[in-house]
Image (cartoon, rainbow, N blue to C red; front, side, top):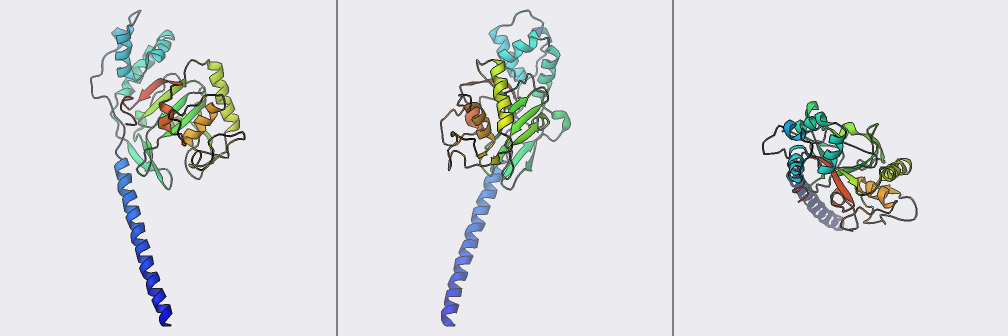
Length: 285
């Protein structure tokens, strides 16, 4: 009996230390999460110009396009296409949204992760020129202190359909742009120097082959990120990367074991189509 009491007392001490250690870990994670909760959204801190006189010009200089980018979040190539299609009114509406000073809210979207959303319906993002195969990236997702962000591929721009691996415990599935319109910060990227037909093929292949795959953060870390057989698990950035890797385009800019939305956003194979709610020169730093 005495030996049992001695063992029991030792077990009690061990259990107490385990509980103390667990409490310390959860406290650290909580404080880490609170730090990550600082909204990454950034509205322009400069004046909003009247663009009507500038856009009435027959020709625009490089300086004009640079100025327009900082007024709308639309780079030169996107602006040229929209102007050629007579979409000046849409450019004005995009500028209005670009200067909105919204107040995002942070909401839990899984056991371990959170996302920022626009609280007001009128703060919806207006997408400029989406095409099949475009890549959507937002920094407005974090897992405790790691602002991992989120990524998706547009598989049907006309229907506003995206393919995403959303959160732990789910399978990759078709989603819709409605959700992306409510993020405070979004960047749109497009495969550079590749025809619309090929980009549409990549999107269609992803839609047909990459739906219904289990979420798995370990892809690339514990298991090969890419193999001869169809991937058994995926996560948001891996799904986008895998879709393009299947066509010979490696969008992982740093070549690491795990691809992240940040890695994709820095890929030299991609060009920016639009940015809303963030300074692209400061993002991810």
